[in-house]
Image (cartoon, rainbow, N blue to C red):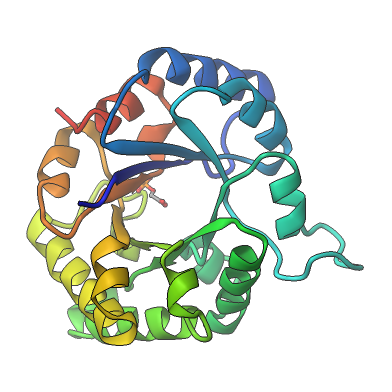
Length: 251
Ligand code: PGA
C-alpha cells in the first residue's frame, strides 16, 4: 500500500570528488527497486552536481536542513526556494543533531516544515527520545510532543506530502539499534497520532521511517514490521555496497 523509502543522510562527510564517486556507484548498484524510493540527503555544496549526476536514476536528492525564510539577510543560511532551484526534492527537518547540537526548537522546526511544504519540498520530520527519557518511560510523551509541535498548522492535504522519521537519539551513531519491536511500538503510536489528527487517508498513506544504526544486517527485520515503511541511514549510507544492500531490503 505504501511505497518504501530508503534514505541516506551523509551528514558532514565526504569531499566533492568522493561524493561524486559514491553517487556513480549508487547509480550503478541501484537500478530497479520497484516498490521502494531511494533518497540521499547530501551536503549543500554538492546538491546541484549530484542532482544532475543522479538524474534519470532511481536515487532522489535531499538536503539535510534549510532556513524557513525565503530570502533575506541571514548569513550562512540556505532557503527552500534555493534548494528547489538546484533540483532538490526532499529536506530533513529536526534531525536530532540539529535539535541537540545546534539547539533547534520545535517552533523553528515547525516553521521549516511549513516553509518546505510551501515551496513544494517534501519534508522529513525527525523525532526521537533521548536515553534518559526512554528510561523514565517518557518516550511516547516526547515523540507525541515533537510530532504535535512539528506539525502545527499543517493541513491534511499538505500532511500527505510529509514523511516522519523516528530516530531514538540513543541509537544514532552508537551501534545500538532499537529492536524491531521497540521501533514498531513507537511507529504504531506515531501512526495512531496521525490518524487521530488527520484521519485514515493520511495515516494509511504516510511513510514512517526508522533511523539509528541501521545496517544491512538489521534492516530486514526492521523493514518487516508493519508500520516501518523505510529507514534513514547515516553511517551505512556512506558506502555504496552497504547502502545498496539496505535499499534491496537488507541481508
Ligand atoms: P546512523 O545515523 O545510521 O549513523 O546511526 C542515523 C541518522 O542520524 O540519521
